[in-house]
Length: 398
Image (cartoon, rainbow, N blue to C red; front, side, top):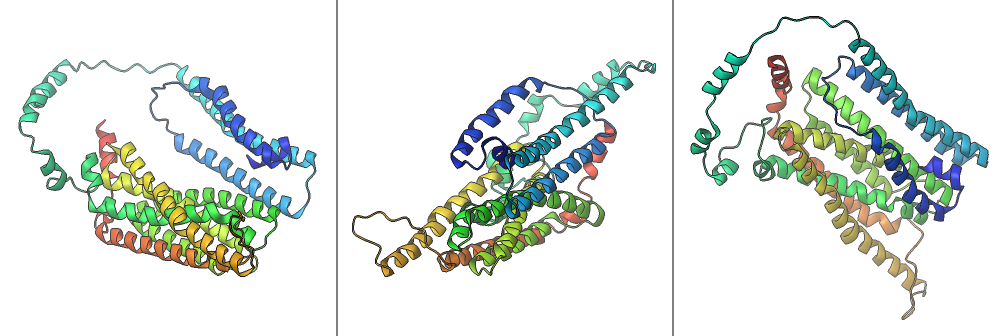
């Protein structure tokens, strides 16, 4: 978005709102006709294709990061911005070319001479299955009360929980606290990063650069935590909640670097905060699917996501904002700029205005990390076994 904005409008901040308004809508209108229901079996090389998409997106992120740094060091002309945006747009369409090539390969395979297979009649098998499986009415007679199912007859970890069973479980409460603390503190840092840079005396061009770096490292964090945690879990039975704890403690370091900055530390801070913020998302949602099953995953997914804006609201609006305003009002009063009935812009220079609030945020994030360690202890036996074995058994039965 940044590269396209610079290429189309230049450095005109008012036009950015216009770009945000028309570009996503235009993309939706153009590509809405490509959406269709598809009933296809899994392809043998789909993982290979996924890695192709991943490599393209990874290269795109590296290119944008390089352009962000270069644009901060060198003044780009309008033609240079246009060239950069052209490369970005080309890389965005590379996955489409990969998909077309793969679709052509599948089409060629389907047009080959089909292999004749003997017919198998399954009428008797269906009849036997109907006779052995009890009817829904028979099943309903043995059902227990709703409260007993929610609190007493909970399934084992990894099995399909009902919505109430999952929401009222201790594991979900711990995970919700960790999400509230982790994503809430990181979102607060992201929301205030521009004003933090302004308070520390960075120019507007530098602020744009490290905000872009934060977004790019958000992407790297998602890729890293998703892929590395999966490799460690499959090969070494390394529990995914342990990585969540490590990411939360890493986030504490970034928050403390905002509270106690040194010259140039804002770049390192943006990388740490962006990386840890992105890394938490795949871990949280993967843990939900592993502990509570996939039957009601969409609802539980959104419940976990609810902790993010809730934490951001409490920590940003109720903690960071009032503390900053209090420090800024003190500064204005000391300088004699706070007059009765006058409206002053509460922007002050210095690191002390965010110090207390971000020390509090670091403590909250550390508490979230400690809470996730409790989840590690509770689920250590669960992650010692092969949690994906049941899915392999089901696929073999099918």
